[in-house]
Length: 184
Image 1 (cartoon, rainbow, N blue to C red):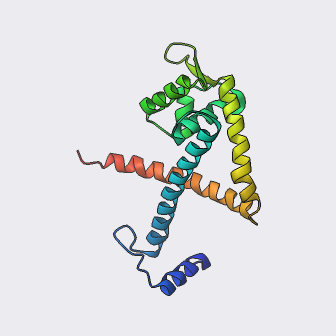
Image 2 (cartoon, rainbow, N blue to C red):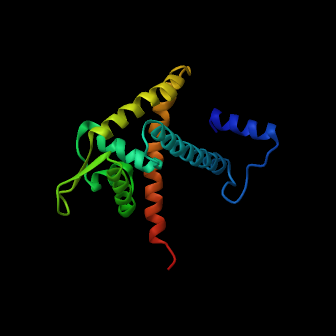
Image 3 (cartoon, helix red, strand yellow):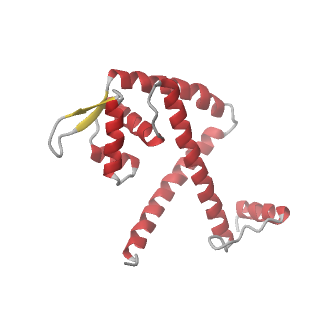
C-alpha cells in the first residue's frame, strides 16, 4: 500500500467509523466511494455557485447548465453549434441543451444564427458579453482571490483536473459497458 492509503486507513481506525457498506467493502472501494460523494457535493455546490453568481450580474434566473452554456458559447469568441456544445460539456441530452438555449435567447444573452440542420450556431449578444464579463469579475473577486491565498493550491488544481479528466473517461467506458449488459 502507498502512504496515502495507509493514512486513510489510520484515520478510519482512529475515528471508529465504519466506512464499509454495499458500495464500499474494500479500502479501494471506500476511497473511491468517498471521492464520488465529494464529487457529487462539489457538483451541487458548483451549480449553486453558478446560479447565484449569474443572478448577481443579471436578471436571469438560471441553473448552472445555462450558465455553463453561456460561457462556452462565448469561449474563444467563436459561435458554437449544438454539436459543439454537447461535445464540450460531455452531454448527450440535446433536447435539454435546446431548452437551455431558448432560455438564453429569450433573456437576450445569446443569438441563434443560420439555418438548416448543420448550419445553426449560437453566439453571445452584447448583453451576453457584458454579463459574462461581469460574471468573470465577480468570480475573480470571490473565488480566484480566495484560492490564490491557499499555499500549493494551484498545483492541487492541476492534479485534480488531470484526475477528473481521467475519471471522466473511466466513467464513460463503464457506462458503455453497462449499457451492453442492461436488462430489458
